[in-house]
Image (tube, rainbow, N blue to C red; front, side, top):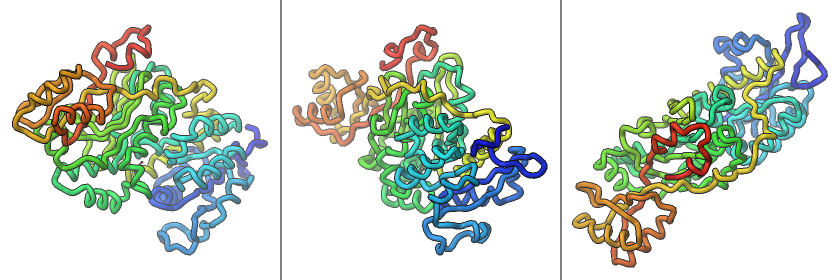
Length: 445
Ligand code: HSE
């Protein structure tokens, strides 16, 4: 193996590769990663068949008190030096965000270092170009931890399903909002549920990203990039968060034998992040707390569902370590794992349209839903009453916004308390579509 390239590492006296790793960031995820790299019981070297050396951990302030398990001499405030250091072969980025982390990742890749990152913001907004940079530098960028915490989904789509014609990818991708919706369903207020999610380490530094659906859109964009080889980035994902939901929406769901989830979905015909009513029997309804559920529907594979803890330091650190082992094995064997040939990524054509869904309109008055039904029908929107509850269900998938529906009802002196989509799967015939199925045919019902 050539020693001329940084990413190929040096070798010790016995000829074994000696890999030097730098960790950037030591917060919730970073400190978990540091502990696992240091802990002999984690046996990272044994699992990868290669020795490594944790050279340094870059932090904003070395003065900040930290876990006694991590030797203090590892800490430095000079992250920029580490990504330029020719002695470093692998950079693990656990800073997050698209500011300083982006520059450091870019420099590390340009300098021929493998990068492992949990940074979904970065991958969802600049993934295609960073992967291209990695492949030009002859290194890999691994990001299993960016989606679904401990759930192994990134490499599953990139590698195991590489030969599959994927029809749809999505699910419940954000632990914080799933936790909040569960707590609200049990009677808690939105504010207290959010505070608790922050205390438990589920929420982002700025929880706006969680509750406005941005974090979910990031993860969906990453999955769609892999599944459809489209350069879908977060700003192109039609998105609504959970901030406008009330406890009444959750209690109506219960009466309908449904639940409310922040659902994400991407197909070749469109994508969407939205709070939605989901039937209790549906896989997306199953996860409680910070659990995520990710489903891939492939033409030959059928439906594959992955579930597990999607947020929190330990599960995410576990995924990062999995990536580190994959990179170390790559250095040992010279075989690239988990990388998408980025020159095949085309534009985001088709994926960025909104997926139309039917809607449940929660009405102000529970006495008689007929006038609302009639009002919608007069505008060409068929609707049916939901039995025993003050709500109607539009019986056709709608492209029109909730504002249009509200305005329509208001014009007939009717008020809607809330309007939420009802999540429904692709029709059965689309999931068993023959090979000649077109993106157009699969796009919408
Ligand atoms: N804030 C994220 C979530 C963390 O709640 O899912 C994991 O990406």
